Length: 342
Ligand code: Q9C
Ligand code: ZN
Image (tube, rainbow, N blue to C red; front, side, top):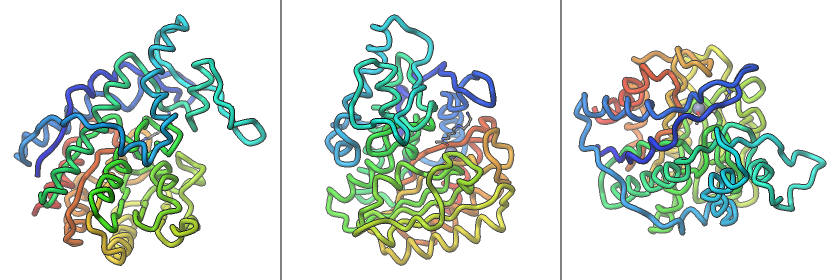
């Protein structure tokens, strides 16, 4: 299968994050994409090409246009306010505060459009966000034109970004934009299977009231795992979307036996939806040595998961999400893809 990757991802670099009482370099760093790219080349998965430019019109159907318009303004406004370093939100309109009046100060706008401090900006961040969005849409176009599968090597990732919020290293929800692009091109049903360690809270929120895009999530139990405030098993969708959202929260320490049982159930739900296309939100932070996660999958498990997904027999778009064990991220992410192609 073809891999789409933009060199512009690398402009999103040098960010810091708050972690366990300290300010550390962000775990989401450029080498992640470069190591995956190197592994794609090493195993000969297929050609690696750059994305085409795409308008934000599709993104405006899954994100609030005002939120999308805000993203490119962050760094210029941050600089105009005399600041440098990493632009990071730190005040949020939580329960009991007003969340309906967009403020003027840039540090307040950041919090207005965020659920945590984990989506941070440096000078090149918007350029990288846009290139990641273009990567997803370009790879989606390949699947639309008949490729059995494609790999969108998106960076930054997207599944924590909701209709009007960023967080967890995510700004534009690349998988959601791709799903919308398939619907706009005539697909009647799409499934998003999110296998990142963290619950895809943004993807769930975007499609929660929709029956056309089914969302199935496998993840760490939000009682103890980030992003905490969404991802419980009783969240089934609302209105027309009721029955089209499925969550499989699992305890810390889950290994292949428990995880693969959930994957089997998730795949049965996808098959039941009979989608025209499957989008896999591909995170490999389920790995046993991931520095910020608590599952125990081994490198040998990733090809197994690819094989199970391939059994669905669906046109499949893989969209890169998380994974922070950088040394093994190439072996693990590409392992899913080679397993899929076997
Ligand atoms: N500061 C994705 O995998 N941080 N995002 C956890 C450490 C947030 C993960 C606490 C993790 C976000 C795309
Ligand atoms: Zn994750």
